[in-house]
Length: 172
Image 1 (cartoon, one colour):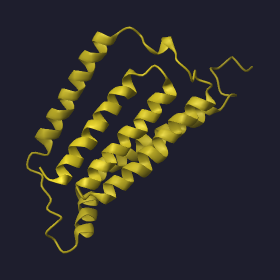
Image 2 (cartoon, one colour; image 1 turned 90 degrees about the vertical axis):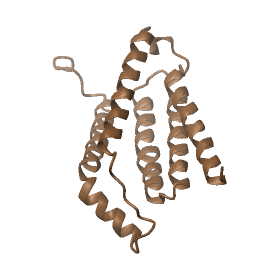
Image 3 (tube, helix red, strand yellow; image 1 turned 120 degrees about the horizontal axis):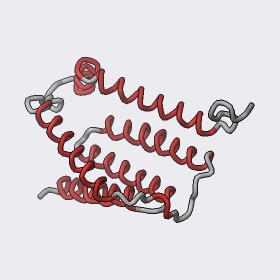
């Protein structure tokens, strides 16, 4: 194994372990911080694969926007910061079944959808130009879905941070 492969495996282990800690911790702020570690290690995996653009976009969008938005939402809604027993609904078996079913579906869709997709950017003269053309030719829909997701997160943060918004009939 080369050094890059060892680094990739170690970063993958860190990503997997921190992702497990995100969903198993009972402290909401710690879960958000473990999410930062998971996103950071995935960005490191992309750096090892020499996909610097994807790595830095992951850092800027996910760590810089989504996690910060999540932390602001926690702080502005006065959510419990310490250990909380009401974060666990007791439906662990159902959650595991749904998670495994979702993971299986996603893996099946990705494998069947991208089985023949291959873009060799290392041997072309304009690597960045090829990636840019590929993004705007084939990846426009996922890019736009991500932008809608970020817009929904921003609107949710605004709604959660406003104290004067409530169900109709409360503030009257």
